[in-house]
Length: 444
Image (cartoon, rainbow, N blue to C red):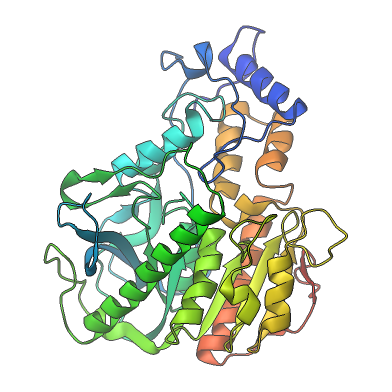
């Protein structure tokens, strides 16, 4: 594979390296979906030169799932006819969801791509555009990256607990695929949802809905409004899963489910987890909907603004069902005397009446709880080889934890939590700090 390598002060790699280095030295926050306030790294001139003969889009290798189940996935187009949305052709709220599930060992179906083409372009633009990583447009080849799941493969004919996933603000439902695939490989049906108008969404037939612009304010009022919409989305999806289990076709275009999938949904055992605002969405949905038996928050504050508040209702009231707070080293805080203290977690902990755990993952930043942790590592090594700049850039973006190790730790603790709460399977990992994963610490 051809790789960009520094060869002279005028080479494309040298220029990109210089821009990244300058940005890091100046304390620039590299922008991303959900970080509209970040300062840009200048992408002009040769930094965006598609004519660079050594340029190549990077396809990524997703970590292999650790479970024993073969995987299938299908996408569904849903319309919530109880909510108006004049911007949609139907005039009502429309959503896209993906269902990831244990499948029969049938290799005739094609492997699913990481993202639909137009969604992939929009996500790439968010990283390589005016607020990007000083890389040419098209660097992230998500549309040709393969997952481990086969499209519409027949389902394994056993009943499985169901877990919903809600992404971060402006983040695609696909950006936590590695975590989702791992849960499905261990015997869960995982339903991921895009929250329309926040993140780019591609509907059947090529209709494309852009996400919220990077410049859109994300103050307390906006976050509260998004939270309410997201909570309604999640509850609507639960309603549709019940209809699926009863034998109904829920897809707005009449698409049929993969063979056997409807019979695999064990709706007596439903969990939910989310990243960032998706974690807040998880807790708030549990507050409003008792169908969810357990929830998990990946580094999401439970208030409308981390520093200004106000506290979310769920942070004040707590829940009567199990909930896991899993934070990064940067943003998970329980001590008011320390920088970055998030009083919503402390309030929730005091009010929580169900089972509760508060974990921190050492040497990580918030985006380490998404696929970007290994995506960035692969991308930068493809471009810069083993240049020392990679360590600095990775630390600025996701922290200094080794991606493979961090992914494994997250997978094991998430699976242990849902194994206990949805299947009644105790795990030694949930009893306290473990020598197997010293990077995961019990805060309380």
